[in-house]
Amino acid sequence: MEHNAFQQYKEQSVSTMTPSELLLLLYDELVKHLVRCELALQQEDFEQLDASVDRSMDIVQYLDDTLDRQYPIANDLHRLYDYFGYQLGRVKIGRNKEVLGEIKPMVLDLRDSFRAAEKNCAEQPAAPSGQQP
Image (cartoon, rainbow, N blue to C red; front, side, top):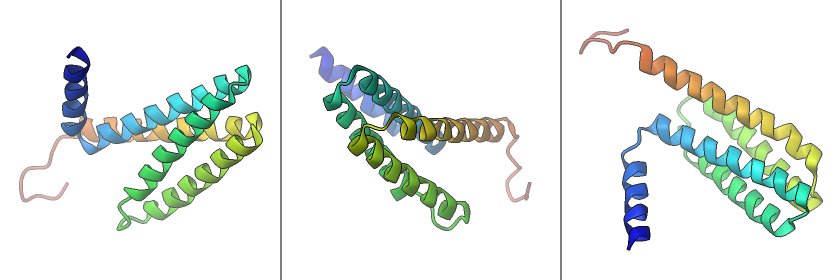
């Protein structure tokens, strides 16, 4: 019974998030799974590695699928997400710590950039109705 209540709470909290909060949550989850990949490689737990890489790839694919293609930066992000997916495949197949070490800082930087952008947008006062900022 408690598990069901907790699951409902999680679903409700996700459904009430702003798009920027959801984006940051996805990046946080991606970072969490990349850390799990590192630990699994260190412990040679290849079952956990495969699961963590697969979940990371799912998140990257979701981020790519939800890009708003009307903005020019979406093309750059698409190429970056494609690169992440390719490199994650190399991590999974080759048990490659070096490749993981290359993409994790990139994901962290991207997450931090989105976090800073979200903070900057939240700090800017809203323009009065009908006026351009």
